[in-house]
Image 1 (tube, rainbow, N blue to C red):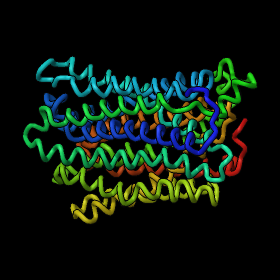
Image 2 (cartoon, rainbow, N blue to C red; image 1 turned 120 degrees about the vertical axis):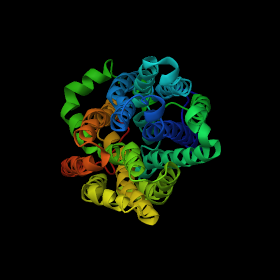
Image 3 (tube, one colour; image 1 turned 90 degrees about the vertical axis):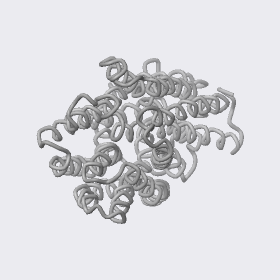
Length: 436
């Protein structure tokens, strides 16, 4: 079905489902790792160190993924613009499946020593390469099937909705498996979650294999307008735009992985909140504040008032709420903790919902996959530097996560303000012709 001409809404539906389900599985695996890095890995892989250093290194292991995502973006974006979107969507999932199974079966540090830590970082590096070309590739795939629609932001927001759904499923699964396996959770219970994720990726691969190639890319082939070296063309003609989009698109990454997972889960553990309630609160907050805002505010609203304004509002909201978020968590009040998780998710997912259309529509079809992938994963790389180095440094320098929190919140606010201001300088793409 790779180059078959798309003739019906059924074809569009198949591709949208393939993109959504595949990306949902990816996010489940991603957030299972985020939760594990906050609650499990410090004990399983860094038990020989002090709690603050163990927490810092565990966050660093999780954050390593962000440092390799630009590699995946460059490679799969380049070949996605040269060979087609669909094939890259399959290959990226295979890579992530290998890494997910790898983590599931890596022994603890008490079993094989430092090799366990090395393998953990290795699997995270590999996962980063895979996911680096996945999400934006899926968005490009979907938006090109709906390139003539007035509701492109809505359709791409469905792909972005998989992030809050992935958080919700992974949080609920973590709570249920933790409760059901009890004392055995740290030995084998947490590994079940990764095994399930690996199996789900296999299913996702099969679904994508039966889907179709992008009709816009097929037209590039027919007209012989496919770039020979898409990545080089992108860097020559659109480098400034790529960098600008990178600093704009870091909002959901700041919120999700710099503030919420794994940082705030570790924070809650340090103030005496149980692992089970923390993950359950995250589940509820994401369900209530994450899923609907992604496609209602990030998608439908962006189709009404434009991409730029929605992105600006989301970034400004996160800048204002970053510190109050931790004040609500620190109350230790269950209702206020859930409220905090809900409110921060509204801003995060509003931004994430609009980014699919905002970034993808900025580039012509010949470098669209490369442009959207490299810009987004460059954003991930920037935040990865903060997660891998700055966050652990602040925790260590302030002798614990509680004292480091005001500096963490200030960092998030500054980055959010930069994103808000830069979003206003973009060209509005609502209604733009995406066929070329």
